[in-house]
Image (cartoon, rainbow, N blue to C red; front, side, top):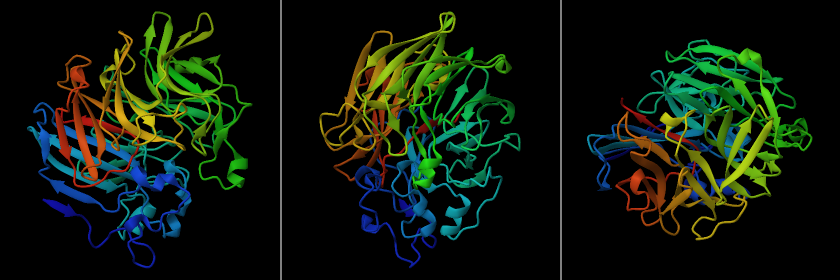
Length: 486
């Protein structure tokens, strides 16, 4: 059974027309409004989803994924995001698995004030940081009983219900002193959630720890020059690993009308920082690195007195305002030796890839396996070396890295398929690191719609364990989580 929700309050332009039908109103200049990026037009609910294969009965929970999804391009209130993938209001897509069945699929816009008003709805209301209310579009996580849509650079996260209805912005019961972050790191052993928040008007970034009960337990302000973007960071048992790289806030970019005014700043020294978790007031130990850009880390861990960080690295200059760089995009390992004052860089895989993920239970601890999505020209067997978002998109393959054996496996989905971020779901809470399933939304060109694909992690190249056939196309987006019932 398929239901199109909110038939009386669908996104319409000022003239009452359906602004996204046929994509006829989409500006030609933005490739992020076309093809696999083209926004979903409706909110959809479907029950009793058809499945090819079998949903593992041990999987009980929700797979949720966030991403930008413009509401209506003829609405002047939404033209601020035009042309930049990162600025569209968030839409969360979710699939509910239980008892070997795919019970439902839902997609819902995150209701910021502006978006709720455009839908003719009452805004749920709540706190706002620095007048920056935004329909959080980057990640969707769970912590302390809350499901949170997150975004960076100042706005607060939004809390959603288990059915993806917006409950309102969240400041963790009034304990968060400022803005929040897109990427967080859960520590399963302590129950804490860690984040690095930044905001253009600050002369610092802020390390935030949220306790297992869901309130901020402490914050630490870390002085930094130039207003750098810190999209992600890494965590070990001993350290918070900060990436202070030469993409910084630019008033010249603001004056030039750039929608996301973070540009390459060659005068800003690239460096990596180690902040002691047990004594953050001691300050950061900074070590210089070659100029580069990093959107995402895979994981980090302590190794004796050293720190090992695996990450996806864009070599040389990278301009976030244009999502473009020139150097190769690779999966690398940085070994930081604070005693020697050195950072050693090692290439793990030179295949262009992004959105690296690890079993969340291994975050901050030694890990063996990692998963990532190939970046390349959609529908082609080859990929370009740079992996720029502006030139390429996610391709038709996911990668599994065995970092102990030094091997890589690729699961290919066929020409014209596109696979987003891969998320690991353990077969049981105490299962081994690789005992579980890798899941991702994959565009199925034969149906013109998406499948939720489940791969057996220990038989990665085999046919999927299950393909949950969804009733709609899902545009390429950002990050997601497997949120288990227990």
